[in-house]
Amino acid sequence: MVQHVFERASAARCLTRVVIATDDERIFEAARRFGAPARMTSAGHLSGTDRVAEAASAEDAGIVVNIQGDEPLIDPAAIDAAVAGLLASGQTPMSTLGKRIGNPEEFDNPNVVKVVTDFSGHAIYFSRCPIPFARGGGPAPRFKHVGLYVYRREFLLRYSSLPVGPLERAECLEQLRALENGYRIRVVETEYESLGVDTPAELSKVTKLFGASNG
Image: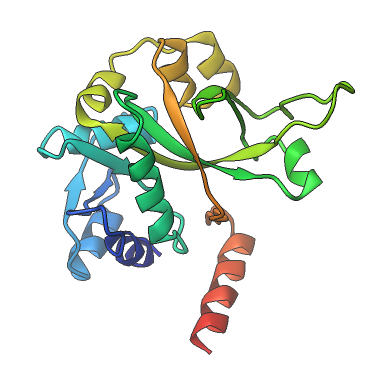
């Protein structure tokens, strides 16, 4: 699965180098076997962003992208769009993706993170709760968060030292650390449908999708 993620990420036009960062020797050795650059990181990190920050500290890239290792169907075009959104947003230190919610069940699902933005496309809040709440004043756009992050290097290296606030603790969403500390996050709308593999059922679904595409 990690190899699929690596190969698809490597197809993004905006990326000049893809590195697998892990605290697991098995993943490290698997990456080395299929020829991917890999870096062992501390096992004490509280979030994926902290792990990426450690790996990025040994690199000189001005822009760093955090791609989840459990999304073997990651769309290279979605990566490019998230990077382009950050580059076009002035001094905004961080960007991510949001997809319009079409399935009402997703809106009520706490495992699907929702995001609301201002007129300029910057995040106002992320939540596991169904936001925005429709009280009767008319429909509002509903977006789910797609967990791919792009950072300016100087902000990423500062991120781990930022205090963890009550909102991040309550929601268990690491991106809220940026908002609670006064930093903006650009949210780029995408049609990419994120499909992470966290359970055997999800693995079976992705395996069938690969089989269909190769058939």
